[in-house]
Image 1: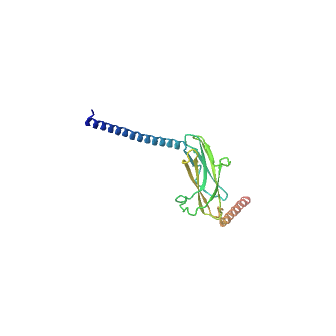
Image 2: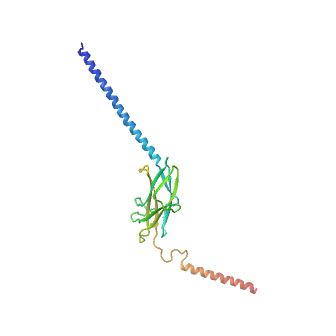
Image 3: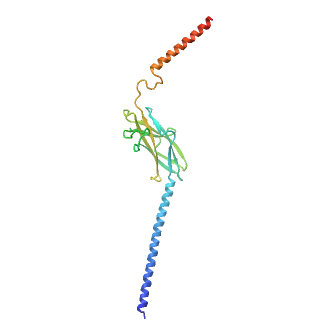
Length: 218
């Protein structure tokens, strides 16, 4: 015969078992979530590490527009751990604090651009590189509006990994468009200095003639 005491103990035992199994289930679920989070983080980190790249400027990042075309030589390097294809793009960019001379970027001008491999072959805007491999290419810029002078331009060059679209590197190159040259600019000496130079040369020749004359009659 089952007494009240025995029945109470049995109910308590069942409740304890339910609590234990419920507790273990919660721990198991928490561990699963932690494991999944860790796994996703590790995969993301490993993937981002395999997609790294860098763009460097071979030379100065600032140039003066020469009236025809301005060229910047750049290098892209695959610093990741596997072969990757990069989308190369260049665009006008003024979202920086100030131009290299400290002037405002508010009136910066637009330049058209084209990309070329160093051997002057056209770049189809994609470059495939093995891990550790690099290649040099040109960004060539031209003035769109010849009336906008004495201004700056900023051009942003970006490389985006095809394997990891979130992985992107960039550099900014700066071009100064000088004002139009006025008459006389470009000569090292003014017309007045040139006349003085000519007078000095004439005097020097006259002096040599006198020296020859003195030696001849002495």
